[in-house]
Amino acid sequence: RFDLAPWISVPFSLGRYFFGSVKVTARETVYHMSSRAPGRRALPSSGRLRRNQARELIQLQAEIGTRLSRVYDVGWGGLLKLQHVVEPYASFSYVPSVDQDDLPLYDALDRINKRSLFVYGVSNRLLGKFPPTPAPPNQAPTIRELARLSITHAYDPSRGLREGGEEFGLN
Image (spheres, rainbow, N blue to C red):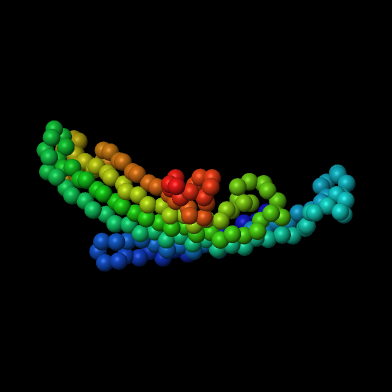
């Protein structure tokens, strides 16, 4: 099996407040199989084994987000400043349906499912600015991440959530 997946990504910014990227991946997976292994007899000609098979597909992904932050002068013990960062984001991934039933199955790379996946969420981070230790006059302060809370949700409208075709679990 030979799998080639070159991609191109274009980052962008919308004004001063929004940023994101668009990515396109072209995937080609080629299989070369033989019905003959060293020291073994060939498979009967009635088998379904074809020597050369290939799968081509395009994968698309787009992301957008922003960053809001505020710095507080706290002066608590060794903590000089505290920065609160809120980063909401959204992304969309698309993989078209491709017939893969006649391809061999070795691992997850051999079956790439159809997908129209929306992912959105928000990340909250607290960053702390601490004086250098020991405190020589020309050393920069240390900045460390103190806490992080991320909430993310994903939804693929091409897949049913519950039996009976209910959407979001509602009747």
